Image 1: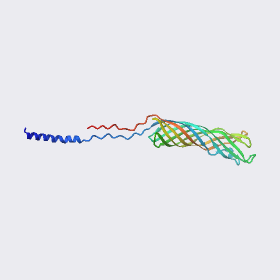
Image 2: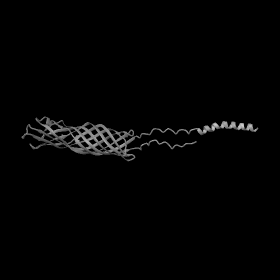
Image 3: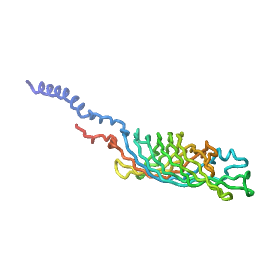
Image 4: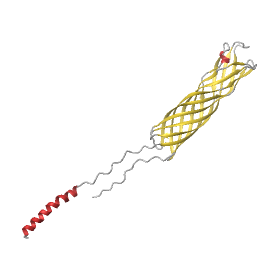
Length: 273
């Protein structure tokens, strides 16, 4: 082969290899795999709560008063008490959760004063009802919206619907002007109950949150039993304490039963040429 033919063969070979090599050099690396959306955690949790209540009540009504001419309740009082509760719930995602709770509420003292003029040795006579209590067991289904987390603190709002088992104890009836003593027996009843809540949670551990909160709780009416007169007979019945509600201040712990699923983190990008 002559020099001229050898040169032409080399040029032809280079022409065939050159485009392929250039294509290899210009070929871009494959794109990284698409990262899935972050996983929103969820799971079951247990909770426990304790706190104190400031009670308020509406007016009293009772047959012993309504059946007495010129008589009416003019005052009503309610004391404070504590409560404990527990429940189970589910965290649906990072901002929505719900639970079912039960709690026992210790007896809060209640009292009232009625006045009357008929059969009264003075211008106006008093009947003072004291010594009775109202206690309850409350069962609620609650829902909460968490409003975001800043520095480990998560404010929330919530609402609940349920039922309350109300129990009253004996209230003694004393007439200062007549020195007569009687009493109103206690009674029980079930009521519809509802609540509005707000508070803040703090993560003290990955699976444990401490909660501080306020709750307005409406317990409905409390039933009163028969009124026993000073002479021993029954003076009236079908009484009630209207609109028993409570301003609750509580502290609680919420324990997640499983770890939160971590958000997806893509693997480090490695390029191969």
